Image (cartoon, one colour):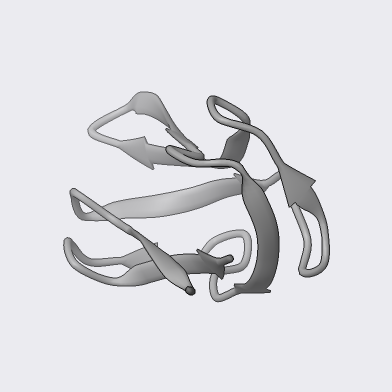
Length: 71
């Protein structure tokens, strides 16, 4: 079953640390966001394989936007 990784805040994508097809473990950092001059890591809450990474560096994302999907 696919699971979405969703943004919790409005932010700019500083770094994308993973790619589609990559296996991730609980706690792995997927992307690094910047909001209000703070760096915020987005981490995997479950282990799985990434189906798609939907953001790129310098993208501005909104709360509720899907960052990645994995199974």
